[in-house]
Image 1 (tube, rainbow, N blue to C red):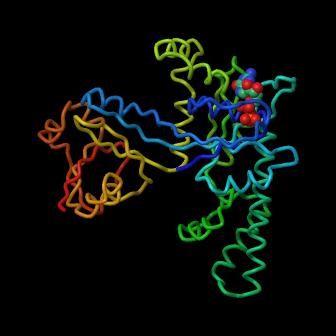
Image 2 (image 1 turned 60 degrees about the vertical axis):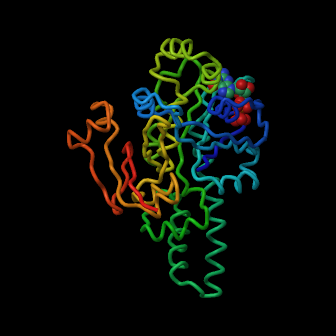
Image 3 (image 1 turned 135 degrees about the horizontal axis):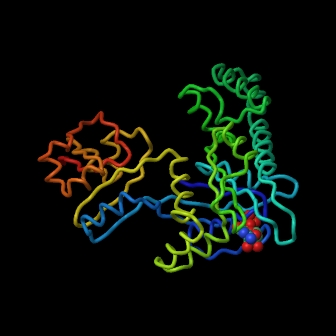
Length: 343
Ligand code: GDP
């Protein structure tokens, strides 16, 4: 699962990327490089279970971020547009801090500009396909769908806001429409504004579009990332925050791509397994090992809070809290699962 950071040059993409991944990156206006790095998803459930089991290894879910660079003088360039098509979700970094050479940010304008450009890029793709399908009459169902999509795009409705059936949504995925990709807005504010909420204009525009907004200061997050853990907590509290914005941002991104975490525990390893929401137990078992999927018998499931509350799996069983689920069970976020299988 790959998430692309996009936005105007100088908005702080590279800085956000560096703070997220802890990788040293070149910052500065439009450094134009594409950086890729994976990030552990902070998870207090895994922390609690790991404390309980003191396992040899603790493994968090991971997602990959890629800094797609800029290319925003005369709009987004082709290369960036193509790179945007290949990611699973987008995070747009909006500048709300004064630029080094002066000039306040205008995050709402940046958001609207990106929206327009992605709509136009999508329209170009759809128009071409519609012409082609009208000519060769090969697929009337797809043509009808794309004509509807074209009309919606012309009316400035992004793909993610269109009313589509599951099948239609799936059919459209092949076109990698940019306005259909899940989008999270990252408001990069000045150091003194990290505890404030997004300005009204941006907040209401985001709400109308059903988009999440994470407020952070990339510069502050970069400083936090370089501190020792104890120093970090004090500094974060002095900013009026409960935790580094980095954590909120990564969790927001994780939810954006509609993943949930299945948990496994034991003396060897406590681990979060990212799985798409709605995954059935055998498929989820296959994430651990294909043999477990193939030989799936049942899943023993207990929600993580109950396990932590009871203190052991044995106590959960005694208290009748452990459920035995079959192959039609949909794994829920935070389920601690033990698979029984036979190969
Ligand atoms: P990109 O072009 O979007 O990748 O932006 P960069 O991450 O390279 O940042 C552009 C400039 O803004 C750099 O000089 C950064 O140090 C600076 N910058 C980024 N985030 C912040 C921030 O939160 N506060 C301040 N004051 N400067 C920032």
